[in-house]
Image (cartoon, rainbow, N blue to C red; front, top):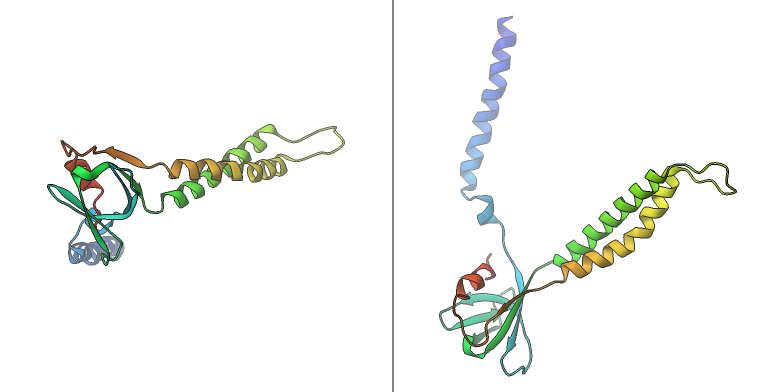
Length: 175
């Protein structure tokens, strides 16, 4: 009996000894490891043309828009900016996938809830109705999810950065 109790205490001790050192080796919290990439659209006051890229720097009087590798940089001063729009990278794809899955699930549940047909010329089981309804609602769900995923966050600047710098820092490119 003593060996069983001893083995019971040995397993948690082994797990603790091997698991906790790996937490300290990583040395960063999950928030520090996660990179944020927001696609940026800058509309100038004179409406000359939208500047697209990723916001890599936020200064006191300007921002820097670049590509992901910071090879091409363009400095834009706040007094020339009308509006800045942001969208997280990959949001449209996530929206389409989530919408398609939701449409399929809702259609399947509607089909299953309607039950089996009885006494008609063509009889369908609840499972068959669920599969057909789920398949039919997948495409509208994907379209709606894509529309929702394509929504951009808008921050009006209008040549003035009053209380906007803190908001802009949230969307700055981080690696």
